[in-house]
Image (cartoon, rainbow, N blue to C red; front, side):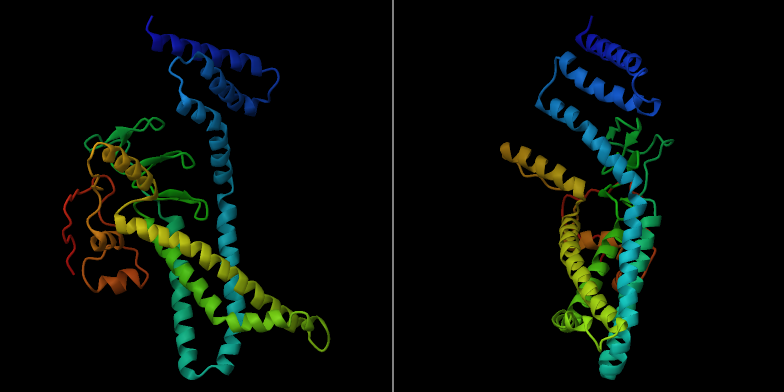
Length: 349
């Protein structure tokens, strides 16, 4: 008998044994998961091809499964947090800061704050809505003429270049970057631009609130103990506490989200996704040992990578498609990719 056939036979026997043994002790809803976990550990003893990578993946499989389940079920909670926290900052800006701006700022500064603040808010809301509601893109399950580089072991369908399987969405994603719990959606070919633009404009909005409200925060922080005493009213206390809350929240988010935005900007400049960054790094090290240089086949040059990412085809698109809300489709269909080993101007402007 072939060794692989014997191993498969033993695994099937273990699965049947685990299922029969668990019926009497484990609730029906957990039987499948318990049997699967037992099968993983038992397979370590019967697999003659076991190595450190197989053992590590098998031991961590329950952890990966738990993370996927938690992320899937708590996706709406994360979305609610984004909406609630953003709405609270907007409410404070309108209720506390806008009247102060109208009474103390000069007309020029007042117009600038109102125009910039509302433009930034529109860009945040538009791109977050589009990022959550736009499907990232999925490989075709019926077409057979689409070029593919491998077959997904979980979906059992051909995988086009740059597509990867998402364990949370339970399907393959075109040009997958990552699964974002704050969007409750995967970031892929058709909503990658919306995700990055949301991160960018939310960072700019938080920096704007943090910088413009710095002096108010210092005054509120220095007088927070005094406002708890008369003659300060409840409205005064809530005003100072709201200013402190807004400044701390926006400053924290601007630092954390700003670092994430810079990281994705670097990836876009290189023509990579988060997943491809790890793949390309390993491939570069492998070829370096052979004295060869690895070049990313999907990088068209730094400027062209940004043009392709934002869909900029002429100069006016930097305004209409980047600085203003735009729902235009991304470059390409996500199934096939043009490979340019040399840097050339794909989209002259």
